[in-house]
Image 1 (spheres, rainbow, N blue to C red):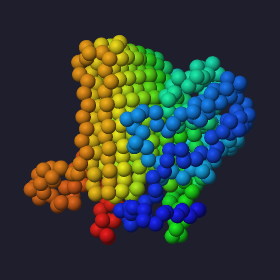
Image 2: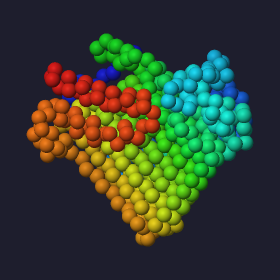
Image 3: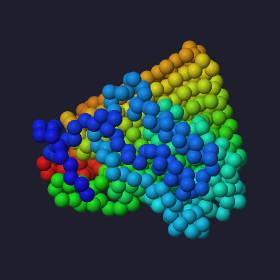
Image 4: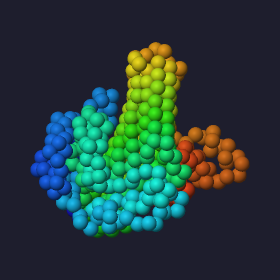
Length: 477
């Protein structure tokens, strides 16, 4: 544990502690981001020359890029909660954490399969017999590299499935050590979801991972991702803090013609965690993608989603919510590019902020000249529950094709709607209970889209517990 000092006169958080001074993007010190680390990773895992070269090329991009390239968003970069100088990744493989050693015949109830990853590798792997028989593959990324080197190289070489202009995405491309590969063959439709679970947050650790999802033509799958803390909170003496952990993860998706993917994610990591999460999808002809993303944990979260609607009649629905408290920071960015004809996009970000929490919701829809007949909407909405909370919404459009069905954006930030509160109170509901109903109802669009009942119930419990904790703190004050 390490102590931190804060300048005298610094502003106070809702809890009364002095807020850290704003940190410059150049101070995001990641001491492990070096060619030496990339070389050790390649050597430890016996990687081919092309992969080593790809790592070094990505590291060069990381060194060159600013933390934010979009001029609309540069003034909203806030890294004051990140203290990552002591974080170090695991470089050498753990012989005790292998797919063969972790594989089990027990599949969790309600799912088609589960892969569970700890900070030292795979801890559990199971896939039901029907999915295996139909050719579904669920495996660690290293196993994919050994089983089909050519397909593995086709995914990773050149970094095509990650944004070239994002500094932290290029960091993950360069220094990833673990990952997951899910492949659903053409024509296969799984009735039950596949669960991808990460246990994160060892003090001082850095985990960089890539998740590759390939859904073949006319195939369908639902995925539930769980990002959770593996350990209970550590109590510290006054003036001390737990060393932070760092997680940089990707979800890289390819959807074939008429394929369908529903991807739900629940991030409930410890508040000693800093997370950088990238998701990028290539959506083929007639294919549909649905994102349902919930950000509840971590001290600082930078989440970016890139949707590329390349096929005619392709579609994407995306809902991302945050529920922030204390001094959490959520930085959400969404880029959706329409390239095919008659494509559809429906994108929504919602944030509820308590105490001194902050959320930046930024989005850009781009309509290329080829995207005749586009229908796309972007909405960003924030609900501030305290005077110190702050939500920023910056929706944007860039239109090069005038022949569209609809292209629109909307945003609003404010407190709880007093008319809604009056309506509920007039029907005999107590004021605090009415506020809770309004807040949880505001976030329900993501909850309802989670396909696994146990995960859906867990998300509702977490949202309610955040509300209860804030209410207790307010009453005590």
